[in-house]
Length: 199
Image (cartoon, rainbow, N blue to C red; front, side):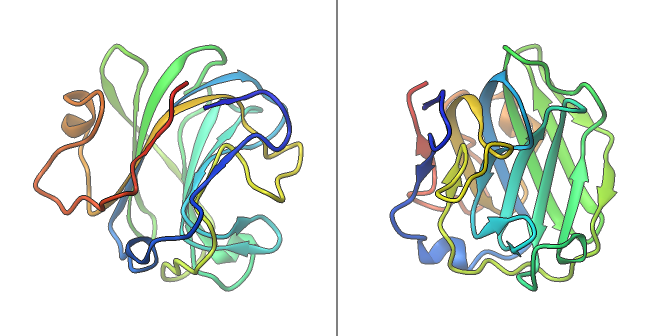
């Protein structure tokens, strides 16, 4: 999927029951590149993810001001910092114009790991924690990639996404490095959640 204009995004027509039933730990991986950036680009969200309105499910975003990845889950109580738990990678983790595969693992409050693979191998990032939300609430909102129907100009991805994986369980760095089309492991893989999109 190539996103070149405001409103370019992909959405699952209906949110599968498997997503609505997820519990922690959860793993999300996105293969993407950033062509240009103006604001915090939404790479993926499994539920309703609208800052200042609602945080539900898990979400992965790119922050261009710092070149970082923000990986989060929401508690469904609103859209403020106290309604989400998040972890941020170090500054300059992501550069414009390069493909990355990023794997985020959310285990619970202040317990996240994010792995970044730029083609030279998978590296676990040291994270800073943000937010003070409670327990994961998946909600019933749509799963979006690259933005959303209500995406503002500072949330739109300008770039490309080739694949997204969502797992009920903890995927590892080895899973990410050894697979180019899917993360195969002994954990329960959720069928029909891998969004295979041609870049």
